[in-house]
Image (cartoon, rainbow, N blue to C red; front, side, top):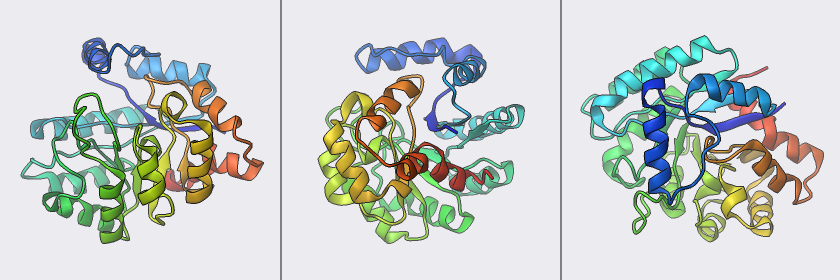
Length: 267
């Protein structure tokens, strides 16, 4: 089985514009779907991905309710797709919306500190973390560098580690192996944190194999999630990296599906 724990889609009428804008912001990086749910689902089948976890981001306070309702509809339509919802820290009802996310059956919450303009260890977002802890919903952070904020890291490994220590019952997923293109910080601050998972998204593009293996060994394969950041990367890319570092079958299976299945409640 293969579970991709970090994928992105957009409503059909927004997908092309969104992909073009995001690609341009990131220096013209390619994309491998057209950004729609239907095309991504077809690509999952082509790529032998059994389950996908779609991440959604409320980039303004007024978006959060509609985004979460749309994510719920997508999850209900496809038997092999799970969705994370999102809230915006500046929304007055962001905590109330977390309860609705739980009621909708969404599997967690995605926050992107760069696009949502906050630092992960800012006290104003602590009520979100506290509520997610009580609701037993995981949170996935974009971690490390992002082209939209090239001179300021809003989700550094050190800050995520601080949140993990302050909220020990909060399940945290730090995307991009704990910090896109900031892997030394992952090794120093995040690797070994017991309530933190790392996802592999974009690692094939930015993380050297020897450091990738070092992080996995220090953090534990039981806290690593296979992920691509589709449409910006493909499963074959991340699989090639994983298969190049000489993991045992148990570790490989944990990363490719077992850890994700446990978080998602898949038998």
